[in-house]
Length: 177
Length: 270
Image (tube, rainbow over all chains, first blue to last red):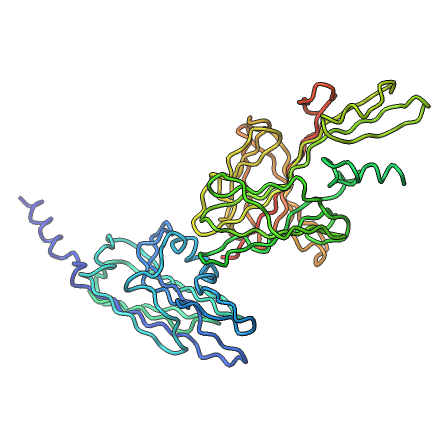
């Protein structure tokens, strides 16, 4: 009898993922360079074994661009493998565009992505420890990867952050149970 | 001088200068990991040199070049050219998967004493053994089997092109050969005529030798399964080599066989 009561209490106290939500604020730094190209960005959730649980964002040149000098058309997908960790962990298995995930490159500044616990991808996340990973590669620029570890679902409101040094600014992950 | 011309003219074996065993042969791919796009091309250099990966000695002739596509079918190289210090060619990747690029080096060496009592050397293929005069004395024939390799992947890797032919010394990647990253361990297996090559000494040397003082060679030995592992210290191109002397020959007239395997592997940063 006591055991049942304990189990019930535990179940009531356990955080429910469906009510939870997550907000990611990602800063692409404003860089003073003579030739600036909007960076390629991939954001994903990684499990402890580094497998990808969900892709959250892939910003790239999704329309064919023309090489300025030769006028030759070059598909933007050619440079997706520059996001080398995203490419090996997930990208090369994907067919782009991915609805609700992939899109055009974005300018320098703060970008917000909101996710509800009762919708994909958060609704597909099993309880556990994860990392939110941001990878950025910029043409004639650098490459950087930043990750924010988090537990899902959150037991209490979480304000997690990480800071890039070159191609990524502040990364903030706010979790609401 | 005449002898030198004869050697360089031998069609099947033209790629190696006689002192090749002291030099390293290698392919240098322009890239190894490509994402989708109609524009997936890789260009390769093929050369013999002591220094990795610099072109200062001899080009490798492209006669023995064979490219295997991700479906196992052969793929033709484009725009081949042999220059003074290196050969080059382009590969258009049109199917997703892993391609194997290989330059085969197979042939026979012979030394003999001719009717005039002069010591002569000969090199060529099995069908040209008749070139050695019938009245030659003290004929010593040895066989050589080797290959120079590189791997490139468009999109998702696969292993169809990596299946061994079970002939000579072959590397079978356990870790996908275009999935190599600094700080991570990669596993490979060596086979001799299809059987695990045990206790084989393998040499792995990072490229860029001109810009540092030490070779930084990584020496490993294969285990009972012919397997070995390498943890890459840094990103970059690596030269991987194993060779064996005095092996059982496959050609009846040969006394022994020399086996050699070379691969250029690209290790990416984290």
